Length: 418
Image (cartoon, rainbow, N blue to C red):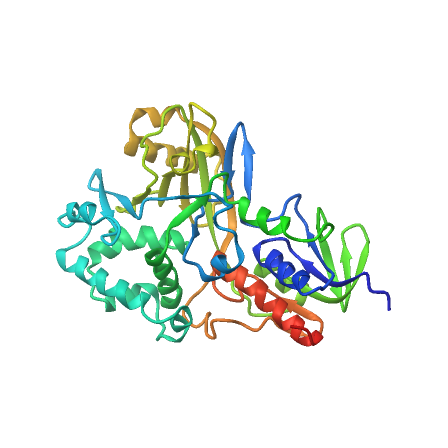
């Protein structure tokens, strides 16, 4: 049988690129087939009128163990956000600071309406709990929903509703907090142990770095895979690439279609609205949260305050994220987002230029309790066919990257190589 490549990897997102990195590093002739014009999957950055727009507001948490293992963080020129947030409630913003990094700021938030004095002590105890042990210990802890875990920690409804719903809800794409408590502990640990950053020129720098380290010819874009039959990978247009093994590194719905795997998780959606402002509403790189839950935007950030290169000189870039899948509405959602921005920042926000809206129906796989047990799902579908992606580990940049490495290790084991 003709074999064109040792391994074909379907999908050029973070999982697929990391899988290719480990395989090519072991001397395997691997080819990444990416349907889009660029690699990155959901982690991409688009140039628009001199601005750099990430496809949905995202950050890289520098404490992620796989990111530290794989990426050259210094070369990404990471720009950190303030460790804390400004929370909108009662008609104004209130600061909530990380007391371990900004103790003086934290003193000022002791008597804020975001929670009780007892809440501050209980959050400290929760932080101590999540950073204890190693990363793998998180996967072994008793599991419930995030909301129940917060209530078992003794936190009041006030701090849960005004801070944790918008903050953790934004990270896990759902203010209902019904995601696995293990996933909550994983990301809360990462926030506690490292910085929340964006590369100087957008999140797309991450997959670009991974792809640049692959051999010439190892990535092919604009190559949509229609089906897989054994080692035959059939592309749109009829071309067939023969492979000794195939790794499917796509979102869960496409992975299910190509591999026949059943029971893969559904997705959570969001919409991200970008605006060009003549003047930044604030110069501080800090996350703004809707503590009242009146929305529609759950979180807002002046992206150019963290990464000035994301906006041209004399302008600022503002992003607003709405959780949930949006249906076509003739612009009503954007109008509601703008009205919220005017409430928060004044009449000047009404004059901001709307640059682009990203509706992302599968921003993150669902992760209810039980979905991450075991934490690392099997990546071997059958001999010669493997799967990876954040639906195999956990819905994070770290999970996607780690799943790619695990798929490569399983494939190398089958080949009898290290």
